[in-house]
Length: 157
Image 1: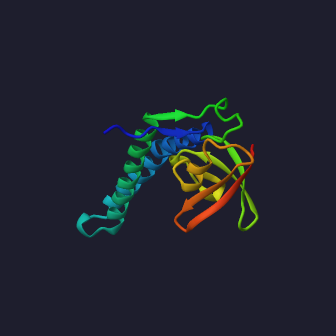
Image 2 (image 1 turned 120 degrees about the vertical axis):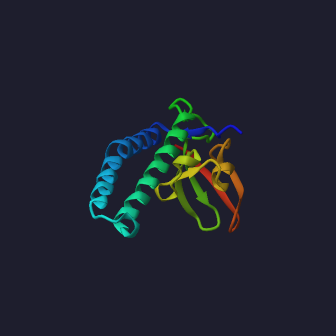
Image 3 (image 1 turned 30 degrees about the vertical axis):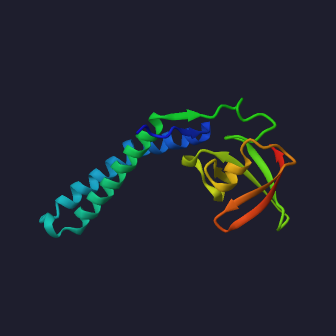
């Protein structure tokens, strides 16, 4: 089965490339040094520092492999795609929660880049799926795990 293509903004791509370079060039060396120091303590069978360093090394290598696989099949969301009157991946959208009369601004991103704390919601999320393809002024019913909510798209920024 083919891997799902990863959609990223230019900023998201830069973030993941920077993380990959840091892991390859800094973290690998740091953990290698920790392993070297831990080995010098002697008996590896009861050496918690060695075990901890090896576990850290495994996590770093797994993350490197994940990032390499993700970046191999990435599609960049161009700035031209982000302009328009309908919401799509890359768009910033101001929405109004009709029930609570609260406005939020979200940027629609691919699932790899989603971070709700920063206002970046996935195109796979219930709100993201509902917003895509719609224009300012539309009122949408969104099925969420907490029940149906009603949102109004105030503006595509």
